[in-house]
Structures are given as structure tokens and as C-alpha cells.
Image (cartoon, rainbow, N blue to C red; front, side, top):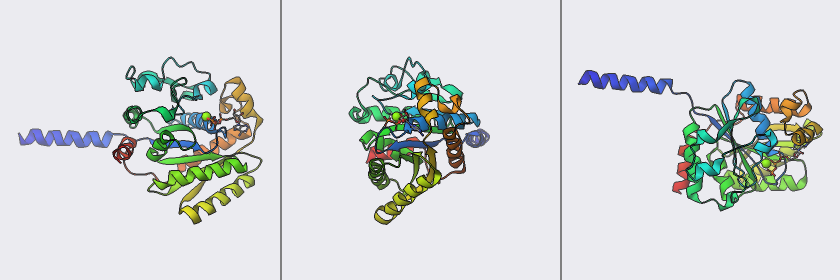
Length: 285
Ligand SMILES: Nc1ncnc2c1ncn2[C@@H]1O[C@H](COP(=O)(O)OP(=O)(O)OP(=O)(O)O)[C@@H](O)[C@H]1O
Ligand SMILES: [Mg+2]
């Protein structure tokens, strides 16, 4: 009997040792819409996948989902089928260009704001199931501070806020940082400045936001870098081929490579506990 117990405990510790580390979860969000989140999410997913990572991209902008459009993928099923318990998550995941796995949002479904706690819990439960089979889970949250967007930013290890240098986008980015940071124990978010003419233009935007956020919110806004304004992006969107694949040597592709490297090096220290655990805590509030 004692030998059997010893064997069982040895087996358990072997399984624990073999268990791969859980995925790092990055939520990509913004205050103002149309600043480039989905393009960053799709191309960052492709870049990380090309580096051999197992990447899952969740298009969480339900109702306005468009990662599938950017990638020219026909999705027979999407998250709405998972929520409705008609499909399991692995059944709605499709392989995107460059090898990442896409979980399509549910265009035509009620807006994220209309989802119930129960629906959100279904999404989280389903994501919890892929946490240990992926290296990175990237969530395109959609814009704004709806409860649904916040549920994903709360649960993510890293929140990447995207802005452009326009004053309206910066003001909205700050508003989002203010709300997001309230319930992030690590008091960290990172900022990517998109559609800039130069790295120095982005630096100025970052410095301004970081200074105000530090002084008034006590929040560290880390510098995730920049993406230049590059017409290859618009042209790739029109062709429905992600720019990293359509024009791998363009300036925007170079910026995505830099962003991927920053994430690999870990601009933000990882939080403890799994996605599901952190999300679960929020639901218990
Ligand atoms: N670096 C860039 N250079 C040039 N154009 C860009 C760049 N980034 C984004 N764009 C343009 O902005 C448009 C909107 O980008 P995208 O759909 O990624 O934004 P979004 O933040 O996901 O929008 P939404 O809030 O509606 O989900 C693109 O179709 C493209 O034309
Ligand atoms: Mg989008």
C-alpha cells in the first residue's frame, strides 16, 4: 500500500515537472478606436509564431471582430458557438497566416457590452483550457472601457495600450490607463505609439503619458516602442494580407519585429497565477 502511494506521488511530481509553463497573456487595447490594435495583434502573432512560438490570438472585439478579415480567413465557427456551448474552443480555432491560431470574434453577435457574466465566464473557461498548450495568448480587446474589455485587461499578464500621436487618442489612452490600472496589482501597463513619423515622436508621447500617469495615478507606463506610419499597412489591409507577410521588409514590419523582441525580453514582469485563476478572482468580487 505504501509502495503504491509512493508510486502515485512520484508520478504526480513527474507530471508536474513535465507540465509546460503557462502562456503569457497579452491584452492589446486602446481608448480611441481605429488606432491600429488589430493590425498590431495580427502581425505580432505572426511574428511570434515565426519565432517558433505557439500563439493563440483571441479576437475579443465581439460584434466588431475583424482579425479574420485582416487575414482573409473564412471562419465557419467563432466564439459565439463556444459561448452557446455548440462547439469546443479547439473546434473554432483555425490556423492563421504564418501559423498562429485564431479564435474568431463573433461578428453579428451582440456587442461585447451586451455579454452576460455567464458568457464571459464561458470564454474564460475555454481560454483556461489552452493556457498550458500555448506560449502566448494575444487578446485584441476592442477599444474603450466597457466591462468586457476590462475583464480581459484584468486577467492579462501584460496590457499593451495602443495610441497614435493625436491629442484625442492620447487623451483616451490616458483615460483607459487610469481605469485599467485601478485593478492591476502590478501597477504596470505598456504603451505603443502607432502611426508616428519617427521614434523620437513616439518617445515624446510616451514621456508625456508616463509622467502624468506616474504623478497622478502612481502607475508605471512602460515604453513598448513605436510603429511608424507606413502606407504598406493600409495597402496590406486592402489586400487582406497581413503586412508582415505582404511586405516583410517594410518599416512597419521592422517595428513589429522590435515589439516582438521586447515582449520576448519581458517589458513587464509576469504576474502570478493562471489566466483562469486571475479571471476567477475578478468574478468573485
Ligand atoms: N502604422 C500604420 N501605418 C499606416 N496606417 C495604419 C497603421 N496602423 C494602422 N493603420 C491604418 O489604420 C486602420 C485601422 O487599423 P486597425 O483596424 O488595426 O485599428 P483598430 O485599433 O483595431 O480599430 P478598431 O478600434 O476599430 O478595432 C488600418 O486599416 C490602417 O489603414
Ligand atoms: Mg480592431
